[in-house]
Length: 201
Image (cartoon, rainbow, N blue to C red):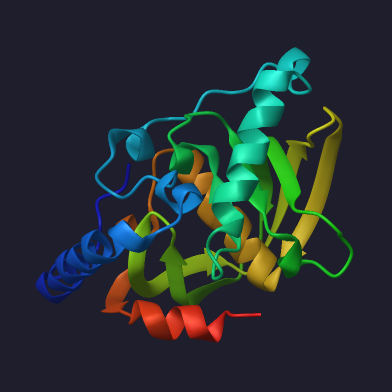
Protein backbone atom coordinates (compact mmCIF):
# COMPACT_ATOMS: atom_id res chain seq x y z
CA UNK A 1 0.00 0.00 0.00
CA UNK A 2 1.55 3.33 -1.00
CA UNK A 3 2.28 6.01 1.52
CA UNK A 4 -0.14 8.88 1.03
CA UNK A 5 0.86 12.30 -0.26
CA UNK A 6 -1.33 14.25 2.13
CA UNK A 7 -0.12 17.56 3.47
CA UNK A 8 -1.31 19.05 6.76
CA UNK A 9 -3.85 21.08 4.77
CA UNK A 10 -5.08 17.92 2.98
CA UNK A 11 -5.47 16.09 6.29
CA UNK A 12 -7.48 19.00 7.70
CA UNK A 13 -9.73 18.90 4.61
CA UNK A 14 -10.24 15.15 5.05
CA UNK A 15 -11.16 15.52 8.74
CA UNK A 16 -13.66 18.25 7.91
CA UNK A 17 -15.28 16.08 5.23
CA UNK A 18 -15.54 13.14 7.65
CA UNK A 19 -17.47 15.37 10.03
CA UNK A 20 -19.77 16.49 7.19
CA UNK A 21 -20.51 12.86 6.25
CA UNK A 22 -21.34 11.96 9.87
CA UNK A 23 -23.74 14.90 9.95
CA UNK A 24 -25.50 13.95 6.69
CA UNK A 25 -25.49 10.18 7.31
CA UNK A 26 -28.75 10.33 9.26
CA UNK A 27 -30.64 11.42 6.11
CA UNK A 28 -28.95 8.93 3.75
CA UNK A 29 -30.96 6.15 2.12
CA UNK A 30 -30.69 2.55 3.25
CA UNK A 31 -28.72 1.70 0.10
CA UNK A 32 -26.31 4.57 0.69
CA UNK A 33 -25.64 3.29 4.18
CA UNK A 34 -24.51 0.02 2.61
CA UNK A 35 -21.49 1.96 1.34
CA UNK A 36 -18.75 1.74 3.95
CA UNK A 37 -16.64 4.77 4.71
CA UNK A 38 -12.91 5.34 4.84
CA UNK A 39 -11.62 3.98 8.15
CA UNK A 40 -13.41 0.64 7.73
CA UNK A 41 -10.75 -2.11 7.54
CA UNK A 42 -12.49 -3.86 4.62
CA UNK A 43 -11.39 -0.97 2.39
CA UNK A 44 -7.78 -1.83 3.22
CA UNK A 45 -8.17 -5.55 2.52
CA UNK A 46 -6.83 -7.31 -0.57
CA UNK A 47 -10.01 -8.58 -2.23
CA UNK A 48 -10.31 -12.28 -3.04
CA UNK A 49 -10.86 -13.64 -6.53
CA UNK A 50 -14.31 -15.04 -7.27
CA UNK A 51 -14.12 -18.72 -8.33
CA UNK A 52 -15.19 -18.74 -11.98
CA UNK A 53 -17.61 -21.59 -11.30
CA UNK A 54 -19.43 -19.37 -8.77
CA UNK A 55 -19.85 -16.25 -10.89
CA UNK A 56 -23.39 -17.17 -11.96
CA UNK A 57 -24.37 -18.45 -8.50
CA UNK A 58 -27.21 -16.74 -6.59
CA UNK A 59 -24.69 -15.61 -3.97
CA UNK A 60 -22.53 -13.64 -6.41
CA UNK A 61 -25.51 -12.38 -8.39
CA UNK A 62 -26.95 -10.96 -5.15
CA UNK A 63 -23.67 -9.19 -4.43
CA UNK A 64 -23.89 -7.59 -7.89
CA UNK A 65 -27.51 -6.53 -7.34
CA UNK A 66 -26.67 -5.04 -3.93
CA UNK A 67 -23.81 -3.11 -5.52
CA UNK A 68 -26.14 -1.72 -8.18
CA UNK A 69 -28.63 -0.57 -5.53
CA UNK A 70 -25.88 1.13 -3.54
CA UNK A 71 -24.43 2.84 -6.61
CA UNK A 72 -27.82 4.00 -7.87
CA UNK A 73 -28.56 5.56 -4.48
CA UNK A 74 -25.82 8.12 -5.18
CA UNK A 75 -26.59 10.51 -8.02
CA UNK A 76 -22.93 11.39 -8.50
CA UNK A 77 -21.65 7.80 -8.42
CA UNK A 78 -20.09 6.34 -11.57
CA UNK A 79 -18.41 3.23 -10.16
CA UNK A 80 -18.38 1.01 -7.09
CA UNK A 81 -16.22 -1.87 -5.88
CA UNK A 82 -17.48 -4.77 -3.76
CA UNK A 83 -15.31 -3.82 -0.74
CA UNK A 84 -17.28 -0.57 -0.64
CA UNK A 85 -20.33 -2.51 0.51
CA UNK A 86 -18.23 -4.54 2.92
CA UNK A 87 -17.56 -7.56 0.67
CA UNK A 88 -13.85 -8.17 -0.10
CA UNK A 89 -14.34 -9.79 -3.49
CA UNK A 90 -12.80 -8.78 -6.81
CA UNK A 91 -15.88 -7.21 -8.37
CA UNK A 92 -16.60 -3.68 -9.48
CA UNK A 93 -19.35 -2.07 -11.50
CA UNK A 94 -19.47 1.00 -13.71
CA UNK A 95 -22.68 2.96 -14.15
CA UNK A 96 -24.45 2.69 -17.48
CA UNK A 97 -24.46 6.50 -17.68
CA UNK A 98 -20.72 6.36 -18.45
CA UNK A 99 -21.34 4.40 -21.68
CA UNK A 100 -23.07 5.12 -24.96
CA UNK A 101 -23.32 1.42 -25.90
CA UNK A 102 -24.82 -0.13 -22.74
CA UNK A 103 -28.35 -0.24 -21.37
CA UNK A 104 -27.25 -1.56 -17.99
CA UNK A 105 -24.35 -1.13 -15.60
CA UNK A 106 -21.16 -2.94 -16.64
CA UNK A 107 -19.92 -5.69 -14.31
CA UNK A 108 -16.25 -6.61 -13.99
CA UNK A 109 -15.25 -9.70 -12.00
CA UNK A 110 -11.62 -10.65 -11.23
CA UNK A 111 -10.48 -7.63 -13.25
CA UNK A 112 -6.88 -7.04 -14.22
CA UNK A 113 -5.43 -4.08 -16.07
CA UNK A 114 -3.22 -5.79 -18.63
CA UNK A 115 -1.91 -2.66 -20.32
CA UNK A 116 -1.23 0.91 -19.23
CA UNK A 117 -0.36 3.74 -21.59
CA UNK A 118 3.01 5.38 -21.10
CA UNK A 119 1.25 8.72 -21.14
CA UNK A 120 0.06 9.76 -17.72
CA UNK A 121 -1.94 12.79 -16.69
CA UNK A 122 -2.82 14.53 -13.45
CA UNK A 123 -6.58 13.97 -13.25
CA UNK A 124 -8.49 16.63 -11.34
CA UNK A 125 -11.66 16.13 -9.37
CA UNK A 126 -11.22 12.48 -8.40
CA UNK A 127 -13.47 11.48 -5.54
CA UNK A 128 -14.88 8.35 -3.92
CA UNK A 129 -18.21 7.25 -2.47
CA UNK A 130 -16.28 5.89 0.54
CA UNK A 131 -14.40 9.15 1.12
CA UNK A 132 -17.34 11.47 0.92
CA UNK A 133 -17.23 15.04 -0.31
CA UNK A 134 -13.45 15.09 -0.81
CA UNK A 135 -11.86 15.56 -4.23
CA UNK A 136 -8.25 15.74 -5.33
CA UNK A 137 -5.74 15.37 -8.14
CA UNK A 138 -4.37 11.90 -8.97
CA UNK A 139 -1.88 10.97 -11.67
CA UNK A 140 -3.34 8.22 -13.88
CA UNK A 141 -2.53 6.57 -17.20
CA UNK A 142 -4.59 8.14 -19.97
CA UNK A 143 -5.42 4.74 -21.52
CA UNK A 144 -5.67 1.20 -20.15
CA UNK A 145 -6.82 -2.24 -21.23
CA UNK A 146 -8.89 -4.23 -18.74
CA UNK A 147 -9.50 -7.98 -18.80
CA UNK A 148 -12.30 -9.38 -16.62
CA UNK A 149 -15.24 -11.76 -16.43
CA UNK A 150 -18.75 -10.40 -16.85
CA UNK A 151 -21.72 -11.44 -14.74
CA UNK A 152 -22.34 -14.42 -17.05
CA UNK A 153 -18.82 -15.77 -16.54
CA UNK A 154 -17.57 -14.72 -19.98
CA UNK A 155 -14.07 -13.26 -20.27
CA UNK A 156 -14.06 -9.80 -21.82
CA UNK A 157 -11.31 -7.35 -22.67
CA UNK A 158 -11.87 -3.66 -23.18
CA UNK A 159 -9.59 -0.76 -23.97
CA UNK A 160 -10.49 2.55 -22.40
CA UNK A 161 -9.44 6.16 -22.45
CA UNK A 162 -10.67 9.31 -20.76
CA UNK A 163 -13.18 8.91 -17.93
CA UNK A 164 -13.52 5.15 -18.33
CA UNK A 165 -9.76 4.59 -18.04
CA UNK A 166 -9.82 6.81 -14.95
CA UNK A 167 -12.64 4.76 -13.40
CA UNK A 168 -10.99 1.42 -14.21
CA UNK A 169 -7.81 2.46 -12.38
CA UNK A 170 -9.71 3.85 -9.40
CA UNK A 171 -11.84 0.71 -8.98
CA UNK A 172 -8.97 -1.75 -9.45
CA UNK A 173 -7.11 0.16 -6.74
CA UNK A 174 -10.06 -0.50 -4.42
CA UNK A 175 -9.62 -4.24 -4.94
CA UNK A 176 -6.04 -3.95 -3.67
CA UNK A 177 -6.95 -1.96 -0.58
CA UNK A 178 -5.89 1.36 -2.08
CA UNK A 179 -7.96 4.55 -1.80
CA UNK A 180 -7.55 7.56 -4.05
CA UNK A 181 -6.39 9.65 -1.09
CA UNK A 182 -3.28 7.44 -0.94
CA UNK A 183 -2.23 8.96 -4.26
CA UNK A 184 -3.98 12.32 -4.25
CA UNK A 185 -2.71 15.85 -3.84
CA UNK A 186 -4.51 19.15 -3.30
CA UNK A 187 -7.61 17.79 -1.58
CA UNK A 188 -10.69 19.98 -1.53
CA UNK A 189 -13.99 19.57 0.30
CA UNK A 190 -17.19 20.08 -1.69
CA UNK A 191 -20.63 21.09 -0.49
CA UNK A 192 -22.83 17.95 -0.56
CA UNK A 193 -25.93 19.90 -1.61
CA UNK A 194 -24.14 21.50 -4.55
CA UNK A 195 -22.87 18.10 -5.74
CA UNK A 196 -26.37 16.59 -5.47
CA UNK A 197 -27.93 19.43 -7.46
CA UNK A 198 -25.29 19.12 -10.18
CA UNK A 199 -26.17 15.45 -10.69
CA UNK A 200 -29.95 15.57 -10.44
CA UNK A 201 -31.58 14.17 -13.58
